[in-house]
Length: 118
Image (cartoon, rainbow, N blue to C red):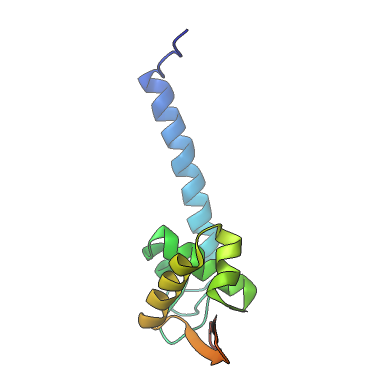
């Protein structure tokens, strides 16, 4: 038996609910700060505040958010949380490093990424 197609009115209602949820999430992020550009949500060389996080691609935003939660991590640590390959997370972390949002340091053969204190 074929599933019924959603009616246009139902599709619009679903879209409206999704947009309302997104607006609430953005409002919550903005309420954490007095000004979107004044006090960063995540401190770093570059302004990695809520607006900047939202401007990043979803993959970089997820990586940056997890790094913020962990404080300091290897690409392997991040990959364990995202269920992606270590090499993929390493590339994402290095992109964030190149953009100036995070720092990295080497301990022996292991590279650790972190968000520096401002």
